[in-house]
Image (cartoon, rainbow, N blue to C red; front, side):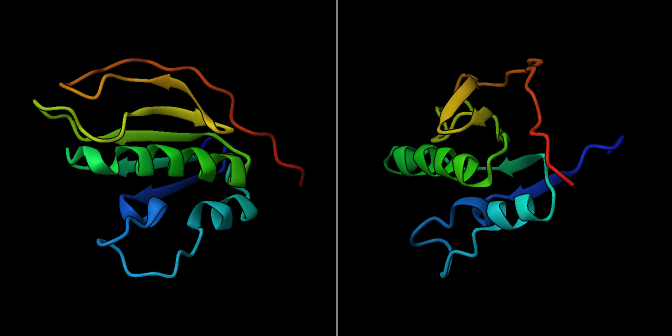
Length: 117
């Protein structure tokens, strides 16, 4: 995309939620980074079961650190809190987390990783 190499994942392709996805975990974020992705976009509808929030949010942080690139999460909008914030994660941290309830439209600036060729 305009010279930027991006990866994309949908829902459980990223975090392999126990009870919802059959293992083993293929570490698709790492595979995409090794293929040259400078940023990974993750489209998801994580649901609102709060028992999965820590798993989903910690997992996306680990995946970003493992891939050494930002992950942009776009989660579904809902009237009740969803269990994983939309936003941008870089190296174990949300650099921007959006509210988990309602629809939010916001521009977020981040730096894609520079990969050596």
